[in-house]
Image (tube, rainbow, N blue to C red; front, side, top):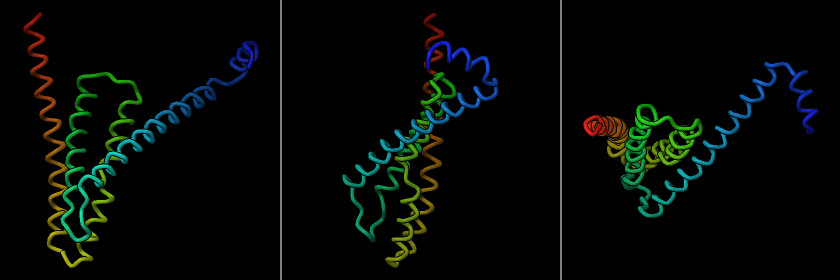
Amino acid sequence: MSPDEVRLTMVTEPVEVRRRRRARRSQLRVLAAVAAGGAIGAGARYGASLLWPTPAAAFPWTTLGVNALGCLVIGVLLVTLTEAWTAPVWVRPFFATGVLGGFTTFSTYCVDVERLVSAGRAGPALTYMAVTVVAAMVAVTAGAWTTRLFLAAVRRKAGRTR
């Protein structure tokens, strides 16, 4: 489009249409960030399952560990993004939704429960269900709490050095 065509379009095109077009482009960028992050997170999760494979009827320690670690990291990340750093708009969807959403695997958690039940191990399946939820909640809380303590200490130290 030539500069004259751009100017003409800007004059004749309603403001609302331009706003919607910009919003759509912004949404597509965020979607692309989530997709790219999801691919990275899912690849990391797959790598963990290759490094620490779980036999069919065994307790799924790898999935439990991945989910707990992902929850810990999301606690750290979200406190950092909301309380310490003004990040570009794509950072939160890329890391929180994409990378960590792809890394944590609550769908595999459900498959693991079903696999344990099908193998006649209802007790370990129920234990796994409960432990995963508790571990996830403790991990995200610990990540957020520890990050807040760290940020408070950094702020106190910065206040003393001024």
